[in-house]
Length: 23
Image (cartoon, rainbow, N blue to C red; front, side, top):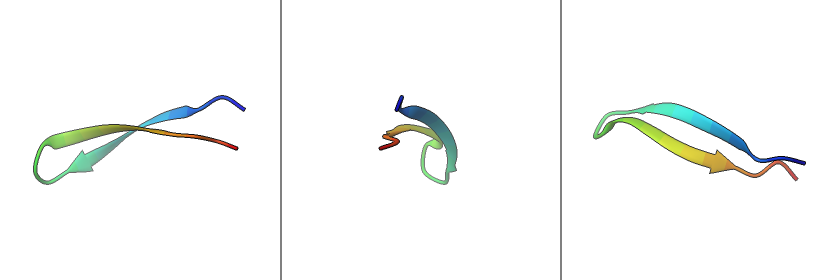
């Protein structure tokens, strides 16, 4: 499956972007 890009709120940087692999 294709990986999904998620954006989450972070207290230190304001926003954090990470990629979660969907197996």
